[in-house]
Length: 413
Image (cartoon, rainbow, N blue to C red; front, side, top):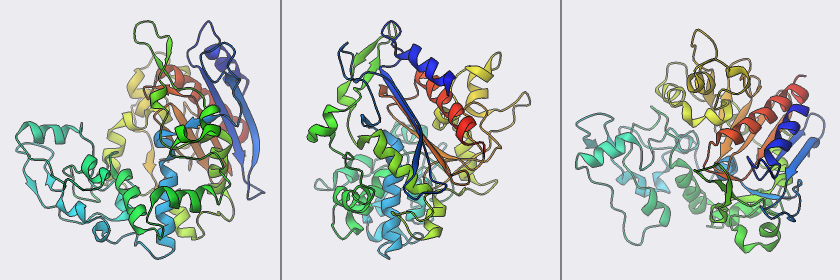
């Protein structure tokens, strides 16, 4: 890990400030259900102030999309208790989805009812057909005069914000979009508490003793006071400026993230007891030759942060984007990745830049954070800085250096 620590020290130095600070944590659960911290390293301070407290494992960070796997686990808990069917239409709980038309991906962008219904499995694997407002198909549909769905004025905020036309029949493609928000709404409506945040607190955070985990960091002085401040790289000179408005959503200490990742690997996970549901979080879900696998591998920018973004280390002298985001050799072969109900699954022997071995599941989040777990090796790794926008190349160099060192040092067994 010396290479990572040296790079991080340079990046966080006051005269460099590529990042404000960063933290790396490696847990293992080969012998103990609660996990053991194999490695922890932090460098930098909580804010741009020269006298700000130094970072440590109890510093808090916003996770962004890196926290989606916890929402997915909450939904699978409802499956485990018979409240939701994994492959049943979710329209019984989310009837608003029946109002979303399917649009073609090419002209004339006609709208029609989808051929299949959306299931929870579709939501958890981003195969629901739900995309985003800036999806090219949605934009072309609107430009051609297509009408957007019109939820009722008193509809739930998620319904009002994410009711978009489907861009493919559920189960036939992959689009990293608003499926997560509808999964949250499903948990809220199916959970006995009738409240998403309350269910997460009682059935996820409390179970794992994640005392700092919260969706409202500004309302928790203990969390807000310990946060690594969010910063943004100024476009002109690359210097850092505070961007604290971006500190929102699921936030917790690095140590608490380790507890969540350790539970994924535990011999008897506390959050889920059904082995088939735990397997969904680890096993590839897209069949060879499927539209979903084609879409996943075709949109390399989705997973470029996990694979390595730029021409750092092994990329010297090669095409930056194609090699790092999805090509593994001079022949230009496709990167072997798939998708589970938790994140990206490595199917190659190793992701050459980040060093993640076969079977590793990994994902990243908006403020340049990344986690990775490998069930066979019993190791989980987490890297965090707090920098926007997402996919920053300098932050990614650190994340990749950390992951490569972590898997080379602790994942070689």
